[in-house]
Length: 121
Image 1 (cartoon, helix red, strand yellow):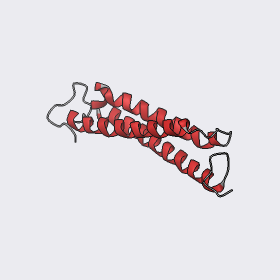
Image 2 (cartoon, rainbow, N blue to C red):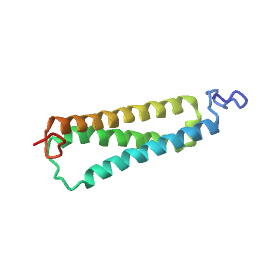
Image 3 (tube, helix red, strand yellow):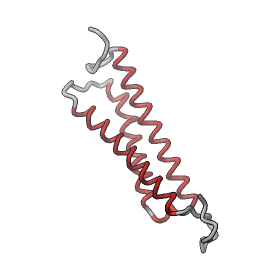
Image 4 (cartoon, helix red, strand yellow):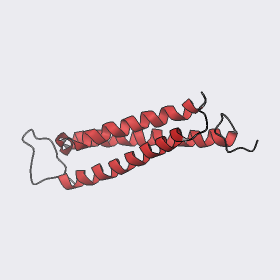
């Protein structure tokens, strides 16, 4: 929602703080799930191998981007539409990387690569 009632002194379009607050909540929850997944995966007693880094790298990078977006959205500067849109794009890229990393981890398990495997031995 654009805040048409209160034009910015610099002429920049702004979003309503209530709308931004919902985004902060959603990003925070998804970031928490992403961190929880990585934490559970890392705590698994099965040893890590080099092939696990293929899945871990996009997950860790994606979580970093989600955290950056979360921090950006917590800033009052995120009420400026351009800043909000940038944070949203960063978050969506991070979310995509986490999803890709999880998909790669599942694929590695299915294919039986590495010590963490779902394939019958």
